[in-house]
Image (cartoon, rainbow, N blue to C red):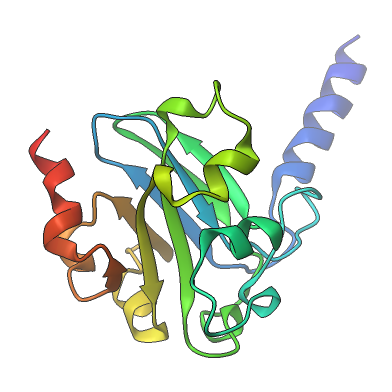
Length: 175
């Protein structure tokens, strides 16, 4: 029995180690509502079903509909929670063919009541769209090497191009 437990433990510890050097997104929900991040994630070994990248989008297409159809990963976050997720990229420059990485934030309160197609293909649930440049992403790398992205946007994110603008999105900090 001990031998089986030891083998199982050994398997789990080696399986959970990231096989690559990929950049990690650290998504934070600092609001008082449930939110959903829709983010570009390159195919990675550990998660076969979550992948769609900026390479799948037209540079001029800023809609969440195209991101959803490109199979961007969606990550649910309860209020005041954080999740870390591998981007699948070994560098920030790899993330986008045209120096823009788009991440969408949706109101997640309806996530369990409404079909995901309705949420992500409609602007009705969209709270914010972040358009990160490579420089923006480098500025958001924390001491552990993770790209720290929060909603509502932190002061460190005030220079990021977003829709609506930083001041309008930041009203969620007052809740």
